[in-house]
Image (cartoon, rainbow, N blue to C red; front, side, top):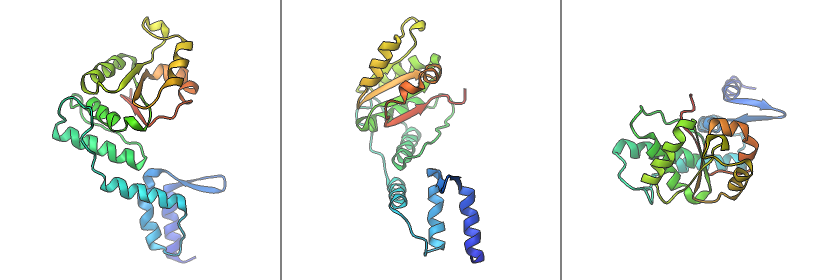
Length: 206
């Protein structure tokens, strides 16, 4: 092995982890791999990598359209945040929207939910005290979304286990499930039965 190749392998090691007989990369590290491949042209790229690269390029050039069905106007910085959320979603990686309190993170996220609504159901997880705010803001800014708030029956207005099972099994495009971290942890196996187009974790640091 040449010194250059050893150096590049060291860089690859820092970006990856070994699982069995394979070396795996987090999607966020994929952007740095193109330089790696360019430096060592003899390396062959498989179909999986080519697909990842195609999504990275598409996301880089993507400009999100105004969200259809959004009531109101996004301020310039809010539209910029929404556009960034849309690009990272198109890439297929997670991201953290860390605007200060009161700058409209919820409505930026609702704009994203509208953009991706026809791709499948979405899941919003938030502290119990914030779940109603999501429902209220969605009714105001994104009324075409079908909001389904899931609570424990012990909250007084919640659903029984049977009702929750039935509701989650029936969700479809344009549906948005809103639930608490507590209930998600308790019934993670139930929530995992569905594939979501978008997952939003609100106040995940709490």
